Image (cartoon, rainbow over all chains, first blue to last red; front, side):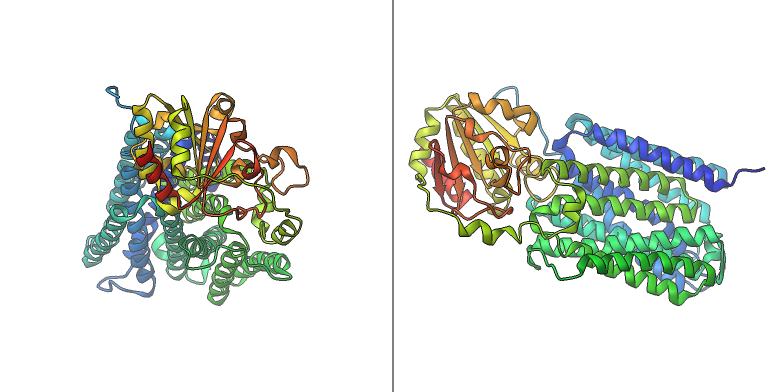
Length: 102
Length: 464
């Protein structure tokens, strides 16, 4: 019997939870705030779904009832992607080592 | 672009996201990690464009909306003050949640575009995944909005409780399961809308009973939810990048909530059921006898510190409120010029989100290798001359170690009282979030400095 592709996705999902578990435990506590902002940015990869939804309109119709939700989701996810990565970058730039000349 | 090639590229972007989190294991590698994250995102978005392959007028609109959202995000990222990070993160979580809801709605209305069947006859598995994604997304959205309002101070941080609250929440959760089952058998769009509405309501109801200082747990929990919502949508869209990311973010948020709960020695359920700190206040103030307190001014504090050889700073949420981090660093600079060793001690739940204090100190140019976590520094208090507590309270209360009756008994605390002298900057003797008196105020070696944290710090610097 053939294996349902869902099982493969489920395997990826379960294994990723474990990867996440070990990777996140190795994050230093002083970087927990950047961790939250960067996870926030990467979870906005949901924009992939938003783009598919937005481009789902049939020929010539850009704004159909389903694509409108896609466009709205694109705006929300884009705020998150740019906001999340940039604010993380801004924070990380502040973490400096003690200057040698001190 | 072939489906196989795009699947592999989505996998690549998932791996880059893993590396983005891996980079955060130390400040040196963190900036590179962030770059990996950005590359992963660019790959995911580009692949999506190429695999949809529809470069008609709709594509232009996608780019326009992307640019609008992106500019808003970039503007916020550059303008937000570091003290407002908890609000920002809560706000961003709500956007992820709402985006998940919108994508699920779109997939429900037009399943053909997602290859999930036709309206009214959506594949069963897809429908379940869609319902989970939408429900978790909606809970994340309304929960994060409440957390945002509480952190921003628009809504009172006090827990809002009423009779039958937990029963109501339990019933609503059960109704979500029932609605999902009916949705699968009838494919009715009305049920789908009701499901989303009930989920919005639950998100709202589960966050209102949770008080302000428990926000570190709430934010981490919502972080986790936003991940599970993304994973749910990832299953619907059969997209590896989304599934991997959802799992990563979901487990990341869960671990952070666990660390925060452990920092307070409370179980996750105790925090989530809420109402903490609201009930104990009355009993605490009734039997409070007037105990003598030593109080001093900036001059006294400066004198003590000038004669010390090592000082440990204990910052807390009050420092963020008073925006005192820059003034504090100036004070420390002056101390260092006098050859006094200074380090910072951070309690896991100091502030309103995980790592909140570290970011504020980094913003004030404090080198991160002078900042220590509780386990790293707790033994050093016994050898230090002065502990300077600025804006922290419950996390220094020795009662947590001595009084089994206390609501915070067993919570790991900083052993501040072991220092030769303790300087405690606070506006009044009022109890902290847990609603209990801090024994440290009345210790022989404690000097209370009643003032605004920023002003007091500046005054001390002048007197040094």
